[in-house]
Picture 1 (cartoon, one colour):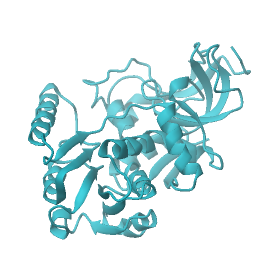
Picture 2 (cartoon, rainbow, N blue to C red):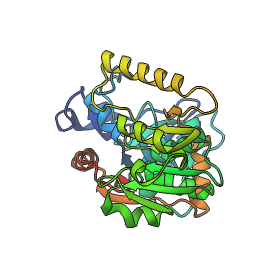
Picture 3 (tube, rainbow, N blue to C red):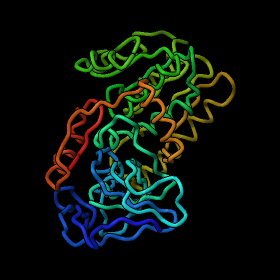
Picture 4 (tube, rainbow, N blue to C red):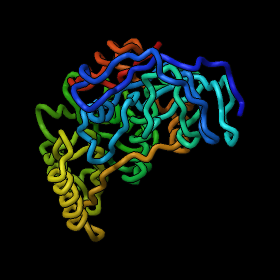
Amino acid sequence: MTSHAVPRTQQAIVQSRYGAVRDVLALSDAVPVRAPGPQEVQVHVRAAAVNPIDWQMIEGNRRLITRRRFPFTPLFDLAGVVTAAGDRVTSFRVGDRVHADNEIDGGGASEYVNVHSRLLAHAPAGLDFAESAAIPLAAQTAMTCLDRGQVAAGTRVAVIGAAGGVGHFVVQMARAAGAFVLGVAGARNQKFVRSLGADEFIDRNATDVSSSFGADSFDVVIDCVGGREQWVQAQQVLRPGGRFVTIARDEDGVVTPASAARLLSTITARRVRGAGPRGTKYVPVFLKASGTLLRRVNELVEGGRVRVHISRSFPLTLEGVNAAIDESRAGRATGKLVLQR
């Protein structure tokens, strides 16, 4: 193992149980720093980002899907410097600037964290740690949406929630692919969404896509907001065989056996209804993070075709994490919320 001097213990923000964020997160000064396993890379965390899944997991809203062991250090998105690498790691060396969506183990709210090398990528040249931390989860999700939607040159795409963390990446990636893009967001974000490259814009609080566009207007609708109404509206504007790609559910909140059963039933029914070459395809997206996918994103970033927009930056402290989560819950951020040392 290639190694670098690090302390035996560290300061980290630790979750003790499920519950309200400010009740269950605390600062600990004695969290062990573990040597990386054979395929792991140890990262000195310099910045992290907040995503809705972070506070949903902390509160236990997703415990039916993924349970976590306590104590747990939250925040999946992180960027920093490699301080050690396992014996079987060949792509990363001490001193490399890296970033990742550490999709199971989190650790962005710690000083040092081990990340499996398959999740890791070198940070894009020219970006600082905060910008690098803002990319992994949201941009990989956006890229997956374009892949599943089969977006290419000439595709007509409507992006619902175009100003958000995932949505602002979707708009840019679709334009980079040569697609026509309609951005759907609140009126206050019109200038921002157009600056990302959207060809047209709709204020989703004043109207809806089907009121502004007729049947067969789009090949793909990418939904970053959720709610049954998005699916209903999409069917009215998609061409036969068009795709409705969504990263959200019809109903938010705690996942219970009943809501999980409803979700499964809904997905099944919509897929059956969309069967055949002319049916509307219902495509739910569940991210599978990887270094390979992240490197595809980074190529667009380094090529100047996708930029990171940081809505607000917070200190990587307990109070900073609490404040960033409050901002995320409010749902008003354009782009990404980050934390940095």
